Amino acid sequence: MDMRRLIQNWELILKHFYPKWIWALDSQQQEQERNKTKLDPIVTKLVEIRAAKTLARLDADALFWLNDALSSFRYYNYPGSLTTGDCNEVVNWIVMKKRVGISTTQVAEFRKLIGNDGMAITEYRREVQDLNNRKIKCHRVFPMV
Image 1: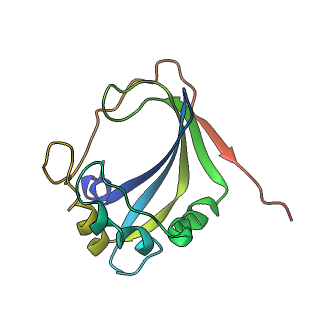
Image 2: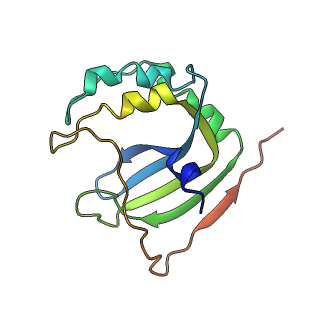
Image 3: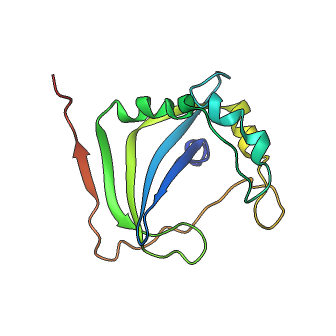
């Protein structure tokens, strides 16, 4: 496994909460040299949410980067668990196949965020989990012409 490539891949997870279930959209971010990316509307707001449990209002264009992730019409889907806390198995994961660019400068801004323990969040890794007989589905959606 190429650790350099692994380290340069980031995940940006959007969560939508229902009373008993969570939908998580996972888009892998490929680190790149270019400083301006479609993630700018999110990155510029990070200064407002440095500490844990703080909020910032995003403009409508903050999620335009999703257009790139969704444009391949390919994604993986599986039932899984939360990646932090008690790791309850209440998440429907949707993992986009196409990667979206994030610059080294933007990565540095994310690393300034402070976690619940008062320390900078420089990385987070959870051990690979067993599938426990779950099925991972690959979806290829073809655009309507």
